[in-house]
Length: 338
Ligand code: UD1
Image (cartoon, rainbow, N blue to C red):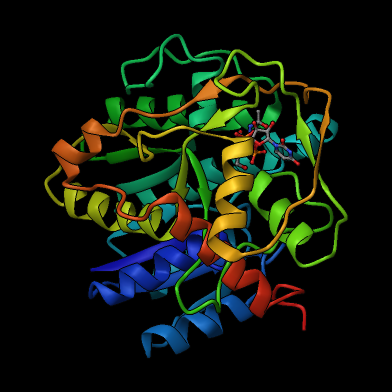
C-alpha cells in the first residue's frame, strides 16, 4: 500500500513516515518546506534504511498535485500539511483559511479525480474548545475555538465529514491530537520551531540548552491541583503509531471515524518542569506570569475508543517524553540548521 503523506517533513509527519516505513508501507511525501526542513527526511532515511520519495510542492498547487498523483499510484493520504501557529493565525487569518482550508479542498479534489478516497486528517483537541467534560471522549460536543488555526481544524472536520456523507466511497478518519512532545529515540528527528517557541516543551528544552533564560508559566490561578494548566502530553512516536493503526482500520472501509489520540493522563505545567528536571538532571528556572489569552484550565482525553477500535494505546510515560525531547535538543541545538 502506498501512502501520500502531506507535510511529511514536519515534526509529526517525519515521525509518522518512520513508523509507516517500518511497518511495510510505501510512502510519498509532499511538503512545501514552508515550516520544515528536508533534512528531516534524510534522517528518516538513515533510521529506516529506505528511500523517502519526496516532492517539494504546495497543496494549493493543483497542477503539481495532479502530476504527483498521475505518477504515484497512492491508495490513501495522511494529511498533515497546514499552518499551525495559534498566535500567528490571529494576525493572519486569511493565510490560515487559505492554506489549511483551500489547500485541503484542492488536495481532496485531486485525490477523488484519481480515485483515491481514503484520508486520515490531522485534527486537534482544540476542536473541543473549553470542553464540556473531562476526560474528553469523542462524544464531547465540539466547542468554540479561540483562534483561526483552531477553526480551520474544526471546519475541515465538518468539510471532510460532509464529503464522506455525500460519497460513501470515501473513508475519512479524523484524528484529534492532544499535546505531542518527545522525539525519536535516535535523537535525529524532532520538533524544530521557528523563532520563539509557542508551545511548552520546545520552550523548556530551549531554556535547558541556555537559549532562553527562564520559562514563563502562563498563570497559576487555574482551578487545577497546582493552579497551572493541565494537558495530555503524548509522545510523538506513540502518536505516529496511532496513524499506522488508523491506516490498518481504513482498509476495513470504515466510512467516517473520529478518534482522540492522547494518553488519558493530565500533567500540569509544573509537573512537566519537575519531570523534565528529574529525567534529565537539568534545572529549568521559571517565573509565574499572567494567563495566556485563549488558554483553558484542563484538557485531557479519554483514550478508550482508540484502544477498543484501533487497538492503539500510548506506551511512553512522561519521563521518557521529557528525556527524548531533551535528547533531540541536546544533539541538535539549532534543530536542522547546523
Ligand atoms: C496549543 C493550541 C492548540 C494546538 C497545540 C499544538 C491554544 C489554545 N491551543 O495547545 O490548538 O493544537 O498548541 O500546537 O493555543 N505554557 C506555559 N508557558 C509557555 C508555553 C506554554 O506556561 O511558555 C502552558 C500553557 O499555558 C498550557 C500548557 O503550557 O497550559 C501547554 O501549552 P502549549 O504547549 O502551547 O499547548 P496548548 O495551549 O495546550
